[in-house]
Length: 47
Image 1: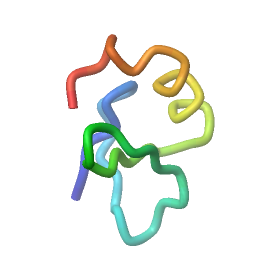
Image 2 (image 1 turned 60 degrees about the horizontal axis):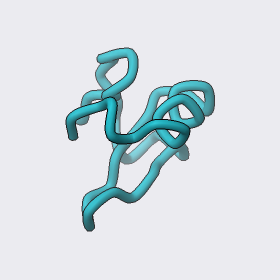
Image 3 (image 1 turned 180 degrees about the horizontal axis):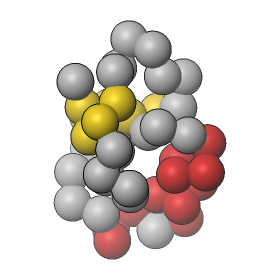
Image 4 (image 1 turned 45 degrees about the vertical axis):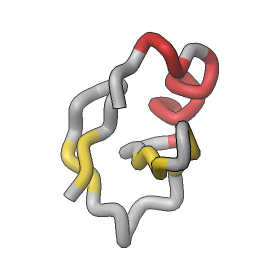
């Protein structure tokens, strides 16, 4: 399981389609909304 860095919700990487890449690492999100927030300011969220 992974943790969405925006809302801290637990995310199953095999089931979500919302991802971003950062420093060679895949970041998983619970929703498109959280992905959009992260993508606007990724430095705000530790990964």
